[in-house]
Amino acid sequence: MRKTILLVEDDSAISDMVKRYLSNETFNVECVFDGEAAASTLGHAHYDLVLLDLMLPKLNGMDFLQMVRTKSYVPVIIMSAKDSEVDKALGLGFGADDYITKPFSMIELVARVKAAIRRSTQYIVSQTELSKSIIKVHEIELDTDNHCVMKKGVEIHLTSKELKILHLFFENQKKVFTKEQIYRSVWGEDYYGDENIINVHMSRLRERIEDSPSKPVYIKTLWGIGYKLGEFK
Image (cartoon, rainbow, N blue to C red):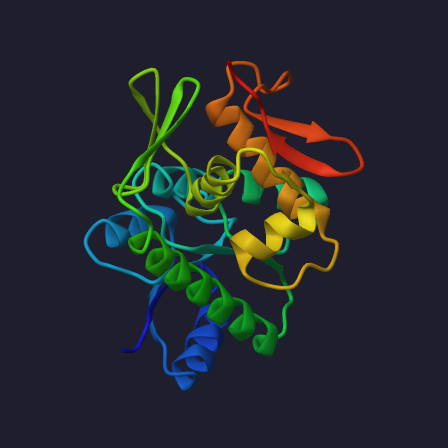
């Protein structure tokens, strides 16, 4: 089945070029040119991936991304001329799955698109194969059937990557994980030392599950080694 991509890009020349190239790679591509149109379109149709520019009229890319993450785990790849580490961290912290800097190679873009869709598909499959159970650690309950997390009876909304990281630790409560092991387990790809991706996702996960993210009790850092789940009586 052909995968469908929502392309959110206000530059018509870039939009036409990306659509033409991805269409040749057998993807269905639907184009919108501002954030409000993207929000409306995403609310009425299913997409396998979103390609998102940040500098959009009417509703900027970051605000659109935050809105998406309140209701969907659809993979999002940011396309932007903003290439500083701060912008990358901000984008990934809001729930983006990947980031590509303009100008980019179309071959690289296609590779990233295919990888993101593949990871998403593998994650959905792996989740359906999980045993039907609720894993509880201290005040947090992870429902592996419904893919949701509750803390003190209140649902915590996590991205697919955050949920998979949390499940990794809850399933292996005594194990210490290096960043490479986390990346291989969650992203399903070889790790080339890009610590920023792991750091941002771990920071964002802590913001959502910890009472005090600067003093985490659920996911502990072992400096120079990696991370492990905290111990509770």
